[in-house]
Image 1 (cartoon, rainbow, N blue to C red):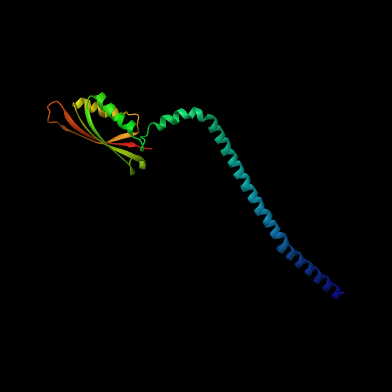
Image 2 (cartoon, rainbow, N blue to C red):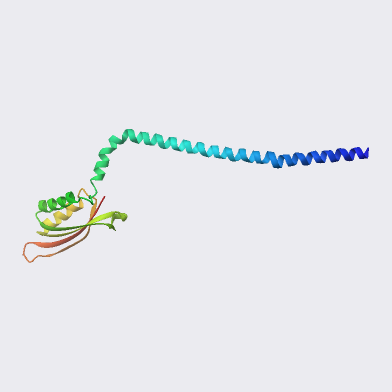
Length: 176
């Protein structure tokens, strides 16, 4: 009987070890693969949801594009065209003429020069001659111009002529 008990304990031990080996070498890797696959499926599902949201936003934007187009055009006009700055030069000349001053405009389009928050700028050196109030009027018109620009420096000195002053403006305008 003791031999039978030992055989039974031995058989139970062998079956227990086989069950543990089966669990460790077969069931655990399968469960790990299932867990990894589940996480991957959840990740793919969240990516699909994100892509669907982006597609919906893109469709919404596409439908509203024509209503935004006018605003895009207005924003586009704020920048000086670096390849063709003629309109900007004409603006400066017309503004000077409307202000009653004579000017000499030198424009340097240097995309490597960075101005407003590292945007490329066109640097204009404007030499002007006219009455002091007209110079101020020109300066105000530059500040309220339709272009994104700022007056970096302004120097005014008396002209050899009694009623006029000479002014030098250093102006930066953002280019596209």
